[in-house]
Image (cartoon, rainbow, N blue to C red; front, side, top):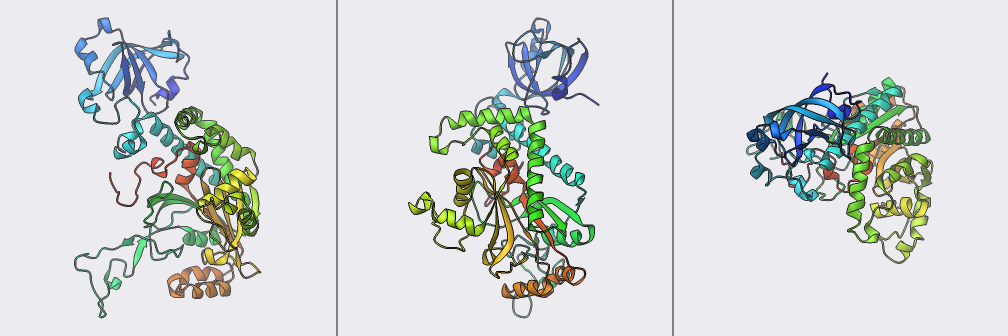
Length: 479
């Protein structure tokens, strides 16, 4: 296997010959090439003997060019790196015209995140996005490692589905019909019976319902795949296409569900702390520099790695929704009408500003809220004995608000049927889901974690469009 730069930089320099390939980050004084192959935030310095190198070749060593360098690995003569390559030969694998580079984000200067989004096909070559995407990859690996270690089975739930798990109705329709001339029924409505699947179908908003059916056969399962919301929301926290992690566990009640979620989050964050220090350090320094230009009130409350340690070292505070409403009602921002959404009574749907107040100002640690009003939560959540709250839980994080939503699922067939009837959800649409309550029903629980929200938190980025390779949002499906 060829060695990548991340490994070469850790080697002991003994004059060993090697060939390394990558892209030119900079070329100084016709002598010093900063080479990067994407495996690390750090560049490998390659020192060229320019007096004995063809001037025509030197002219082609430009920012963005792909090259192969052959030489000896030696101790670095200068500061900034422990090793460097004493170059014997340079091959140009792919030229990059300096005049063309000037119109792209490959030009070595500071670019805005908005500009980088416009060239999403190139932004992974920048230091910031290389760091973000390496950390995203590590987090993804850690997700699978955690659940496999704990004996969960990975389940691939359908991307095309006929059910709306959330009951929100904000779904992308899937059809093979001619949109200019769709089949119509006798009443003039679109006849979905003549469509590809013989019924109305959409892109999934969640794999939860299908994952539940598998948990009630395999015991404990998890999904990790793309989900879609046709929500016309142009914010820094929403995407139309994103990835969801959804474990479901038979025989787990809400307390066990909260234990699982907290343990899982701490595991994956610890993994990037152990394996992504160079990238975290770079992103942390980037944020510190950015904060200097912001008003005090808008600055991050703590440096990136300190924020991650804050989550690892603090037990998540468990607070009922009712207690949280009392705290918020009596808080200074609420009394002085500083909140955009004033909390006036029990039953209010909490907004991000309320969630962040609880975490950052009141408790000063991650918070798990539980036992929410039934009328602001989904039909599948278990009704409490009080008849007005459900066994739901949300995990709230500093700087981000809600990162996890979950619940103990309603295992009682009659109660589930009553809830579906009250919300006009036809039983024939979810007959298979109700069957799981007919044959050996049991207490079970699960949660959903939006993967991009996790990456957002772990990298310190402020816009969710910057933690997924090609973001999908209203009026944008570029690339």
